[in-house]
Length: 308
Image (cartoon, rainbow, N blue to C red; front, side):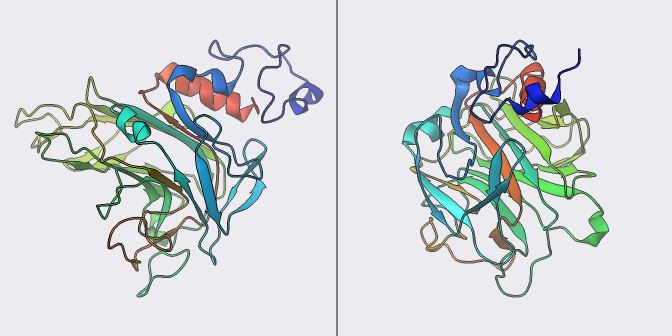
């Protein structure tokens, strides 16, 4: 079935329920996907409004440009740009399982310099702040890259699980995203506490290579454990990672690490030569308190791609 250009253009970022359009994956709009588990959403329609939980944000040198869906966040390679939100402790506490979905468009990953320099080094996208630690409870950022990495981005999600009995408290897989520079790509990262399974989806599909603590894995998914499993087959027979228990948090930062804001959001934080705020574009950032299903992730990607 063909959909005319006039029909598509009639859908704005905030007009997601046009009854003329057929549903995708059983949903008429992106906001309908796993709606009961969506706890935070940013659309960057020329503002910093968080539309799900009503989080209050304060921006520093934040700018906007054409996004994937309407307007989007525009980072900078010359000026530190980020936003800090006040959040109830219930948000971090709810993320025993999670999904984080977002669009990014960047080519600006650059090796760090000898001194902290804007736009060079690991670039922060999102952090759920742990004021008492160097890293936050959740830390989403692009790792350093250089020309030898070709057209691939290196995306890392570092999660802290402080639950009693978890020895490997900091789990931080790195996802390689090939053929990803200078174009909009959709990424969804999920974790299911019941199975210990972490999964990565790019443009709605599971897959890709990941670096994990006990070796590279392919296929976009692997099991996280509370201690060293020895190998990919859990030769040491340890238990799965289980429910996440992040440090209590009252702040979320977008476009930065928690230690690259001014002043830093963590106690004793300092600027690091290998880290900086985000210099690219991003759009439609969503946090869910559950691991989305593959079908829901595919629907979310297709709906947002269609401006719905």
